[in-house]
Image (cartoon, rainbow, N blue to C red; front, side, top):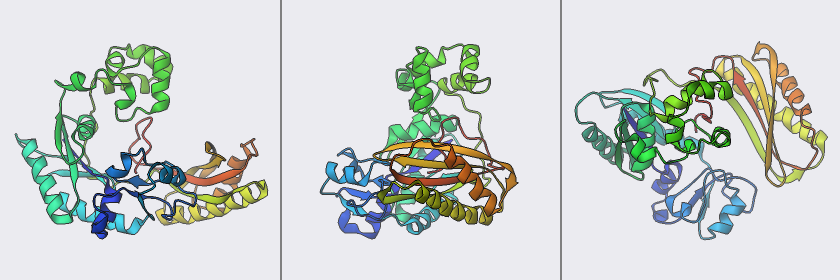
Length: 349
């Protein structure tokens, strides 16, 4: 299996449109104004060298890299560039699974996957001007992690034979699907490396993490993954909207009005999906940068705007703090999300 991951995708699209930016630190996020509130969507490798990364506040990014070029997010341009890349990948004799703007899995046949990987890299570059890294593995997990070893712009193969040599001494959150919260819980029971996780008793972990997740973590640590590459189109697990305010909201009545506004926007998105939502989640980021979420299950799956707005209001009632608010978000989760995500998988980027 191959995993194709476009290098610094969003920044690379912007550099294609503005060749004079090549080699300069480029940061994309918000309205592209680092004096206003917002977060980094992506940063070029030149900007990353200064500690600028996705999710970092723009104001922090400009302090770390004052010479960076800041640009606004242009979703339509990235979607169009992604479509061109995926069209190139469809030219290869392989099952293609698109998992985001900038990445996809391919199930290929043949005795020389490295040759196929290099041909993919060349063809993507020649056809779109964008660079990619290709990871090769015996399954999707190995291919996904191999990409990280090959970046930027390389080809890397990870197998069961080389698994522990490359990953055995790394922390568990080096594994795809293991996030910081799970890694912290593993550390609490003395499991601090992939090797130790692989040696753990699945029954013991089942008691602590659940009957499915516990044994799955052990399989993951061994590099095992039986999930297939599928050409079935991806279906979003949720639809959400959020707003970063240029001035903190101190009036909770105004917070409630803003949540209602976002809920109505989300309701329109849900109606477009034509799939009922089953849960609404409200996100509140308090000043200076503490984020909390609360959810509210719906009485029945629905696309009705009034029900979604009421659920958002109920979720908001669960927040007991009344500190100034810098960001609000509302997300509706669908009844039919498609394939189950990995426990700590944040979903499509």
